[in-house]
Length: 151
Image 1 (cartoon, rainbow, N blue to C red):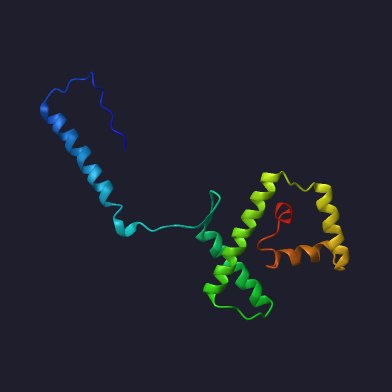
Image 2: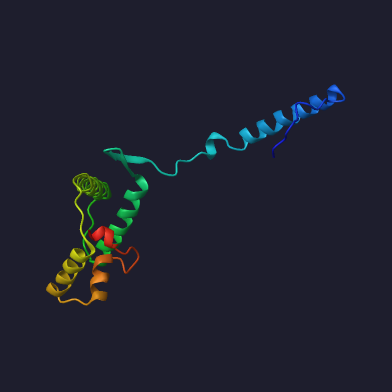
């Protein structure tokens, strides 16, 4: 609620000013108390900074969840979670560094080059395009790999 007072208006009595000031004070106190320190919870946190670019805990958690699902589907024994989380963080850091270096040097991959490379991989592995997409997703399509990721 926004209360506006026109400074050119004159209050007819001092009681109006007192009521307005009391109302403003009370709403401020209520607003402060409605957000106690116990209600404040972090929604994410920075885990690493790679040349001014952050990696968040949420990114790690999502990658960890997808990786665990993929390893379960492959019947692969899971390493300890802290080990896996550390490996995934290292992988994200390396990926960020590679992408930053590619951008700094102007390295790009044309659509034509990407298409040719993908076709060659599909042929070499005797896959259809749909099978290839499933292999890339590794998660039954829950997180498809984009062309940008392939570059």
